[in-house]
Image (cartoon, rainbow, N blue to C red; front, side, top):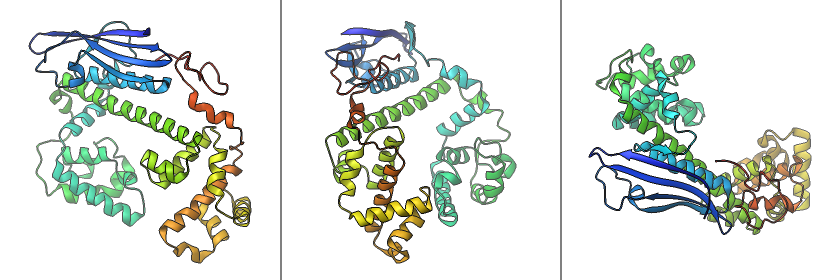
Length: 373
């Protein structure tokens, strides 16, 4: 393997055993490879991650630079979360915890995540669901999961106490303090307000572990999205239909359309896919959609739907209703001037390939993966 980056990691266990390992990234036969290698062949009691225990683990093997970088960063975050530190070489983002330690709210978030009252949290999520239905809002608009975890951990009894939790600004407190505290006042609590004791309660090793577990989760999510986007592009290039793509990606049609719109917004050419999906509607229906979008604008779809299909059509079965909205969204993509019909751009599949990997079409050096981790 042609190594392009390497660092040595080291950890001293509670038993005084020093574990060293090597993280390396390189290219071999047109593929990017990320490896973790350690000289430890015996099990170490306080290292519970089996991947860390193994002598050699491949974190990534594939042709896409962005996926390789995400896998590398995720693996490093996992090592940092269990106490490894760089002993030789350089790795960016290894001092995230030092920056976050300076923020008082980060310590509150850490304590909240580690001390969730599951029973109270379930009651709060049920409350949020009721509020969302009543206000016709998305649940996360009422309160995020983290905000509810904080409430369950600290159990505020008043608006003033609720205001001390990150995320609860004046508007949220004014809107929801009464209904939230009506729930929390029925629960006993160990925490006291104000929360200036939290930093003394959470140790730095616990805080560090929490920070890098958060970072690893974020990077795993980033890696997953990159892989799914590549799979979507490959499916489009292979002329898969929307029905086939939903099965391929294990998502519903609504989510598929959201991802397709994101690809179009990012400049990918999916002209053939759109034409395939629109081929089942008549030219008259398509022209009616185009005319309605031109007259009513492209931002709101319901007025366009009513203009094309009539008010009564809103009562049709949900599956058929959704399909009609899909046609409008697909036609809208063609009108945004973003779908050009040039298939070279779909070859973006081959961007960020490892060196020497044949790529179809043309791309810049940046798209060929000439970047740094």
